[in-house]
Image (tube, rainbow, N blue to C red; front, side):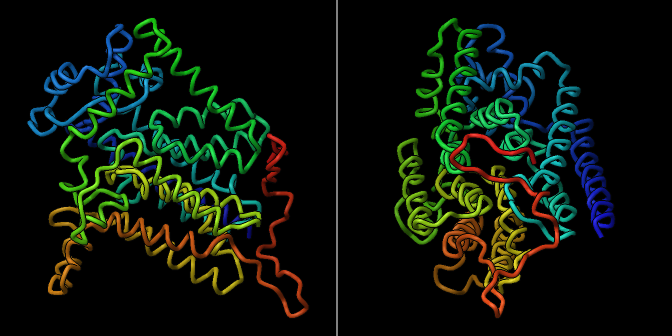
Length: 439
């Protein structure tokens, strides 16, 4: 049985890699896309030359060298932390087509590795077919394919989270902390990793991650300006620059993922979430998770799922960040492996709401066609057109309300095992020790 499931997982992974590789490679060779990758490599090129990537007119001019879209030229910026200069430095000197192909190959390869390492967050076992299904979902969902052709970093953040945990479980503590620190190229997405690290391994682990983040940004600042405080330029730029990009505004873009988009869709006020609003949102969300869990020990997969849905719920994100939701897959796998009927029902809801959030949207998309069916219902069309935020909110609600996977008790009062896989094959979590036994 194990040989069959391994063969199925290998076959599905190869198929997913071929589909995603062909899709992204074809675009990289023949079409002028990967707009965000151009911005990020340009920012790295500026930094390597001792110039700030947070110079808006200079970045607009740089984008105009490659693209003719006036909206793109007027609405762009290097909204990554200084440490991203180090991440994208290897791509900056390459010919543009070579940089695109290398980036796509790296993201496809890392995404395939993620599918095989999801068990890093699961002490038990998945259904035997789950890795195969996860490989297809991660590599071939519509938004992962979209991320590949615009050159966004979401799949990199996902890979850092999963592979960092796998490295930590294997005893490679420094590497695990470094990988989680790299995710802080987008700190608003990576902030949930800090409470997750504390929960999984105690306070030393988030402290080391913060130290890595500080060190990476220190190195980038010294490289660009010779100042270790260059990160403050990023903070100032983010406050004024992000809202100047029209499609980042919640009142103008129905594809925004956060809770405030549903407020606007229901006729409420337009609240733009800045840094303070995002942090307050995280505070409320993690407070709800803590209240829901009480004094009990939640499963690592549930904690990860709470972090995964918390980012698009609390941050004013564009749809290309929604591949973050694949981090809910370990929780889904545990729900499916459970024999408890309530867990099985929760698995159906998690899969349905996650799929709904990932559906193609925008003008002429599936969400618009679906909204038109119910367009005669008062007020419902605008909500359905904001299906990203609606799907994320429903998924978050399911994760919050259901909680951790529930053991199913037998008639004798003893827990019914969820899988025949030996316990020794699963990673062990020792929250207070700062390290784990090898997986």
